[in-house]
Length: 195
Length: 371
Picture 1 (cartoon, rainbow over the protein chains, first blue to last red):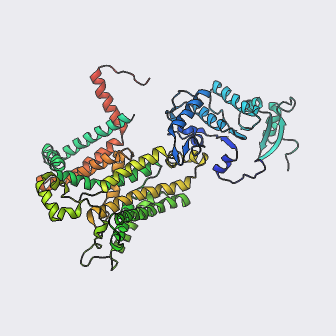
Picture 2: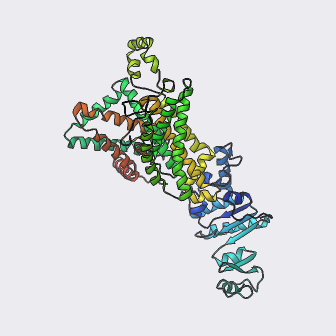
Picture 3: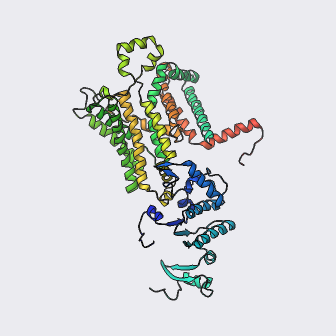
């Protein structure tokens, strides 16, 4: 990461180095369901100004931050005191998205960000991922949905048996079709298969 | 939501008293008479009120200890052992150290606090490093604490000759209010002319209760308004998400158990410095820690609610002890009552069904208020 090896660092250090992550399982790792939306939105920066100072939380700032983000990311209902566990799946995902994107990370790793969401919410998530790319930040999208990958990505890396077997350009009409990718996924890659 | 919680608690208390009454009835006693005696036993005289407060103080503190640990996802069964270690450390400092008044008491309380924090921290450390469940370690540490305390009390310079107890703490370490003044001539004179004060100061009323209230507020503040509280609660609610958010889960577990231990330790220290003035050799645990679990449950793990819950529990226990001499009813009835109260509080759904049933009959039609 920016010339620094960040393997095996603690989660805190990795976050501070500019990588943010939309976790695969939003209820297990992404949210504290018994926390309010406002509290969830500061999960990664609760210790920074303006949310806290000398170990004391500033509830007003936290709440204001939450209301702002809820407006921007259209999280419903617009109640920052609502428990995260009481939101719908799509809105839960929006909370995570809002939190991760406002940190403005250099690298955003999105693992299955649209799993279990309805069409509208999927659209929404995609829009924000692309927006992030347009800001010239790296976005790594991990997904089981081929269509999603082909729609959103610029480059597609296919992993088979723990190794990246090929990286193809999504705009390259010849390579980037379901057949080629499917073949690579099944281990039928041409060039890098045997290493 | 908060109001409904309080309502559920109140209904549970009433139901508990009802079931306790039925138990009395079955045993052949008049429940109204028995509850009358108990009520009188708490509010009948300033002396009784003072005793209730004195008896409740350690329960409030162990209740806060359990509630705090619970809020951070840990089940502290070890308040008992932490209480014992806290009282032992306070007695040791109270007897061996020589210091001016006030300072001596503060040092003794801090010593109890620190020793119990380490005791609680051991369980936290074992959980963090080796994944051993804190329920098991804290229960085992309870017995370790008990026998360790007995062992230390048997130590020659510390043991009081011909008594199964340690030496009394020095007077400078006492936190009893107006202890000296009460038995001085001037004090006696004033008290003789003021019936209320005389009665109220008769029991070993001490600063412990005030300390308990301050700790309740402090713990509430930590949980609600500090980043430490935020971290601890995040770990308690969802370990995985907390870790993902960059919180050092293991360290927080140790800190949480240490704080819970420290609070239980203060309970032991105030009891020694304010009431018993010594550590006795115990055959079995006194039960303050276990009662603390019940107090925390009644308080729905809220530190400030632990104060009324502890007073209720302490009051019931104190008043229950008057049943036996007055009408010969067993004081175990009180344990039934307390058990039932906890039982109903643990089943909020049942109470909700009962209240909604009652209110429906009152209104005639059911109003859908979910929207």
